Length: 453
Ligand code: FCB
Image 1 (tube, rainbow, N blue to C red):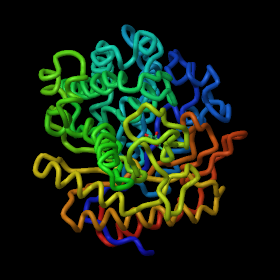
Image 2: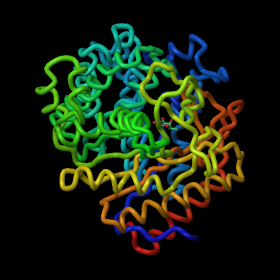
Image 3: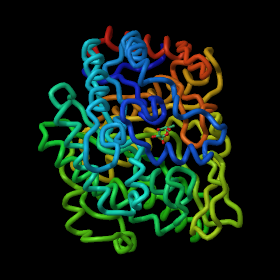
């Protein structure tokens, strides 16, 4: 085993989300989400049956048993908003809340900390139809729903996540149309960023009011590397860095947008909202997959780090392929040191304002059914880089790998496999991969070395 020892109390976990696993798309009163509608419009590339997912809604006990076998300290799952509030506003679906109540009890019975994310992209369809995150009202509806979930679960849930990756929702869902709700607004998508941030801030307030503590957010971070040496390359990379990293992290951690130009494009009483958005957090979650190489725009730029689709030529930056590194099945370069780079960047940028960090997602898509040696190498490399960041003084308290099982990778469907556990999509049979046994042994040896209790 070549994974270094982590500090005492370090939390070892795995992540997942509702739309990607639950299935049961209209079971027990669940309403449709924007993603259900997007899938029904044929937007999942391989036509995977997202109404079935991995069958988690029915088989969650089996998956909790797998988590227990792993020796995991914590499980990051998401609550499906339209399962709890099918209309996005108004009546609560008791059967939906009951499901999460059972899941939380099952986790607790196995000594596993439940760490729910309240929004992992499945907006109730009626809210999407009313403009989704372009509509300020959605932020208030989110806060209401967050309070409802906390009222029910805060007595047993010791760790909360408001929103997952507002940058991807903004960029892929509203600017480029690759994700639900499929809008192609380019820079007119920016209000979707602001309203998600507002939802986060209002959500924190609602969670605390309902008795929840230990609240964080899961933000994607990518070190932006500049391609080329021209002024245009530098400007392109800088703008991309602002839009993808700091436009989300700065408001949450400092109460400001990273530049005046961005702030000026945001809707509503921005200054007041920023006070809400920057409500103190107990911790900050980082999702890391790879760096991004960015320069001046070129005629046809492929957004290589996200499934290879073409970037509209009118954008003022272009994304290039990162050469010289191994690639995952998504085409994402494997750069463990990018995780260290990102964490050190966060510490340097925010200093004392940075709360303790958790890695809320990190993993890779590799199509190796059970003998997934590439995943083991990926995880080993990233845990090494993470330990280096800790040695450099970054306060990281835990690591959640993405993902416990294979699952529906959004627009890509079932073909991109991120799991420690293989899913046979015909039978929904679960088979632990070699990486599962490897991660179990890592956790075991960490505990034997006294890194966790
Ligand atoms: C992240 C998402 C997560 C999963 C991974 C691979 O952007 O948060 O749901 O799809 O990518």
